[in-house]
Image (cartoon, rainbow, N blue to C red; front, side, top):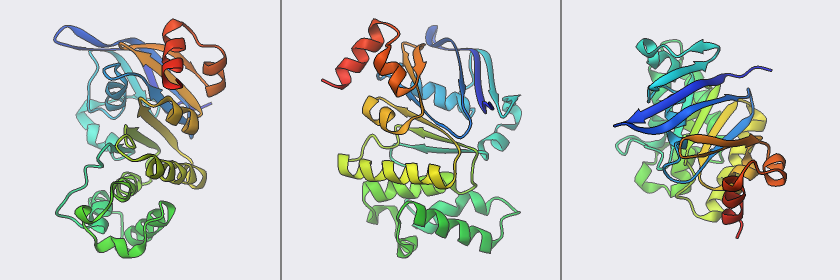
Length: 244
C-alpha cells in the first residue's frame, strides 16, 4: 500500500501554544480521507502543513516518499490541488481565465491541451460551457465552488486538498457538490484530503476519517469503526453532538 502523505512526530507551536502535538498518521493513495474536529482543533493546520504553507516546529512531513524541501516548495505545490471555503477566485478574471491560470504558467501545456482539460473538468462538475466568459460576481456560491474545484484540478494533481470548501453552501447545493466530487473521484481517482467540522459530510464522503482535538489525534478509522468503536469519551461526545 502506498501512502503519499506521512506525518512523523509533527508538532506546531505559536507563541508557546501547541497547535499540533506530536502527531503521526498516513494518508492512503487514491482514497478520500477526512480530517475532522471542532474550531481550533488543528485540522486546517494539518492541511496547510501538507502543502508547505506551514512549516512544523518539529517532526517530518513526507510527501511522495520525500521529506518536504521548503527551498523548492513551489514545485511541490504544483503537484497538489488546493481549494478553500470561498474559492479565492480572482474577481477581475472570467471563469476560463480563473481555471487555466496555473496551466498558463506551465510551458509544456499547449493551448489545445489547456482547452481540452478545461472543457473536461467543467463537464465533470456540471458547469455549462457558456460560463467560461462569466465573472465570479455573476455566479452563485455553488457555481463559484465548482470553478474553484476546476482550477485546483487543472494540472491533474495527485493530491487534492479541500479546506472547509463546502462550509458556506446551502444544504441542497452542498449535496450537489458532494455528488460532483464523488463523480470526479470515480472518473479520475486520486488522494483527496478533506478538512471539515461536519461529521455527516465526513461519513458521506470519506474512506478514512481522522478525528482531532486540541492538536491531538483522537481516533483514525472508517465510518463503521468510529461509529461502532469510539476510541474515548471525546469521540463518543463528538459523535453524539453531531447527530442530536
